[in-house]
Structure formats: structure tokens, C-alpha cells
Length: 356
Image 1 (cartoon, rainbow, N blue to C red):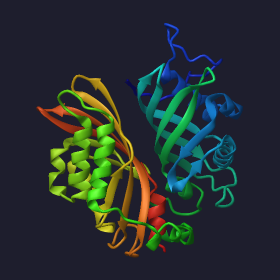
Image 2 (tube, rainbow, N blue to C red; image 1 turned 180 degrees about the vertical axis):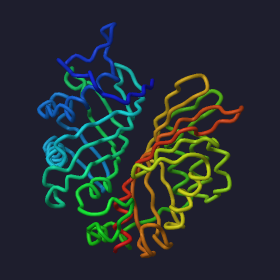
Image 3 (spheres, rainbow, N blue to C red; image 1 turned 120 degrees about the horizontal axis):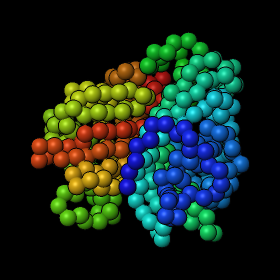
């Protein structure tokens, strides 16, 4: 199932019930209302109600929570820096049922103003507009529906920029302190790069786990896209997978339109990391019509920064970072194409590498 919600207004949660008109559990209402109540209404005590004690979360910059205390620390730190934080759910889809639980994916936008102190220093008064994607597991724990796991990627660079005095240029590398020393711990010879055959085997394994489908297989389509475009570097075949009028909500809040802007984005990334390899971590597929699917694909990228880019000159550092790409796949003139794409990854880390 799928839903698009641009405005969370009027979704106040008055009790612990998340039921539809028939009295059944409503996963859409659960995700949107809990997001609204915790972030917008700042009822942080509800974290205990909506998150399992064993909740785990993986996110940008290698962030990992394995208990609620760490989640509280993160929520308070973010909200203290941006007290007027609002979270908008832009797109939401899910699979599952009341017996097995649910897996959800939602694209979101966060707004706020840096009027509080942060780890970067005194407040700047600058506005924040941050985009991201969160994939969650929602399961029954002791009779209550709760989040048990989350994989989230968001624009950490937007936070750094909002908390840094001075220019609002998209990539003010010379004006932002990015802790390149910390990056060194996650680059260089400590990383092990899998072989091409190992990567292909792992990618095929993830795709196979979602099961066979009659007719068109979104999993096979995406596997071929990853292997041809990213791992195979056959950029000339972008039109085989993406529609001419593609809408692309890219990292760091960029809005791209059409094949040529997509091509430029792909080439810029490959220019910085010519040896880039993408490893598929998971795949969520939902059919939303006879000729339409929504998909979410968390990934890991490994590559050496051996080329020039908008982030700076090459450092020859080996880097590993994560991201999530959500795509809408539709039948266009009898051919299956990606018509809309959302992507979130830690671009801040790539900027830091440019300063190592």
C-alpha cells in the first residue's frame, strides 16, 4: 500500500489507538501520527510507547542506536538546536499484515530554525530544510504496536550548513569544519573491497529474497539497473531505465528534472569515485496499480576518491558510505521506466573526504 502526505496538520494523536474505520490497525496512521506527536508536538515521553526497548537504528555517518537512551539523546540534541522542528511525510508505502508485522518506507522533509546551541556552536538563526528517507519495522511487542528497527538516511550537510555562520552556497567546503581527522578512521587500508563477483552474488541474493513475481519483476529490473549503470558504468543506457521526464529528489535538497540532469549527477559521482561499486543491502517492493510499483533500496557504496569533483581535488582515499534510493517504476509506452526517484545519503561525509 502507498500514500502521499505533504501536510501533517490535523493528525494529533489523542490516545493509543491506531485503528481505521473498521477497527483494524492502520499502519499509515501509526507512522504519520507518531511522527507528528514526537517531533512536531514534542511529546518525547511517547518514545517509550511507540518504540520497543530493543529498538535499533542505523543512519547517516555510521550512526547506530541500540537502546532508547541513545534515541533520546539524538532527539533532544536535534530539537535543542532547532526548537521549532517540523517533520513532513512526503511519501509513504508499506508491506505486511497484522500477523507478521509491517515494513515501511517514508520520504520526509524536516524544517526548523537554528535558534539554539548545537555541537557547532552558538545559534545562527538560519533556517533548516532537510530531506531524508526512513525504512522501519513495526511489530507487536507485548500486545502493542511499536517500532523495532529503523534504517534512516538524511542530509547531515543541511544541518552543518544551518549551524555554520556565513555563506549558504550549496558546497562551501572552505567555510565548514567537517572533522576530516574523524573520516580517516573510516577510509584507507582498513576497508576491504569485495570482488566484482562477490558484489554481484550479494546483490542477486537480496533480490532473490523478495520472491518471484508473475510478469514484470521490479527486483530484476533494479538489479540490472545497478549492475549496468553503477557497477558496469554503462551511462549510455540510462534511458533504458529512466523516463525522459524523470523527477529526481536528489541528495542535499537538489531537485533534478529529466534524463540529462540525471546523467550529469551520475557522471559527477563517478568522476569523484571512478571505481565506485554499489552493494544492495535490502529491497522493499509494493505494487500500487496494474502498471506501477514503489521500491526502496538501501545500499552501501565503496570506492576510491581518485578523481576531481565539486567536493575538491582527489585524495585517493578509499571510502565506504550508505544511502537509500526510493523509486517509482511505471509502464511508459510498453516499457518499464523509473519515473520518480528519491535519494538520501551522507553527502557531508564526501565533503569531509575532500579535506583529508
